Length: 347
Image (cartoon, rainbow, N blue to C red; front, side, top):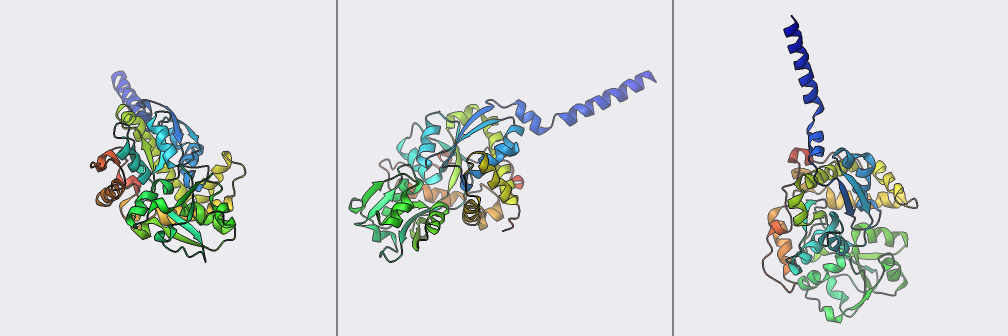
């Protein structure tokens, strides 16, 4: 009887151990680098909310990660921060990443999760200025932000539309001032993001023209989570854990947009939640929940389309040697497709 009791007791203890050591706990134990610095692509706005929301909800902590999220100043700056090793992760426009990799073959960065399946890059002008297509910007004053993705990809747009860039007068300005300068007539056109500039120009009560790059021969993806190849190789469990938390956060943001936006207040108490709600509507409707994503899951970029985007960027760089898709994006750190299917978006 005693032996039978001990056997039952041991079996019960073993089942308790099995229950306690969940996959989540096991992954946390295997994390190579728990303390992480993350560089956003922009300021604390709706397009970056999934990271702040994920931290506030504890998604990253539950993966064994202690994540510090810092505001950004453009895709090019985020790429530089990751390439230099100052930050382990960044958030950047995929076209800007591709351009960097083409021009810096020994110091590349790698996208491990493509959050935006479509591109927000665009030119903006005011109605009545005679600028309705990219070719019309020749001879005009154009306001740009130095590290902005739309500025970085302007040569690709110019190549696709036979625009002579030497005929442009570029004015490099603070990203917060572009729309104001356009409204004041200090520039004729600006580069920007649909999810940012549309909001700004609307609030300034302007009638404006939007020229999306994608409508004028420049297909592209939007922002993606990036790491250095060296970091990914040395810390694969850390990257997988971060990607899992990000994926979970984006899905939660789709289900609970108001709660996700409210998390921005923890970083910027002055954030305009009504304005950010409009931005989030554009982000989800145009860039994240595309028909392709709804059918195939989050971060499921079509390989042929991705290869074509890379080739279009290469045409405007000094180093035109082929750039394999695998050197720009990898899916090896993703959770299963079943975990990446987006929830229903009620809007």
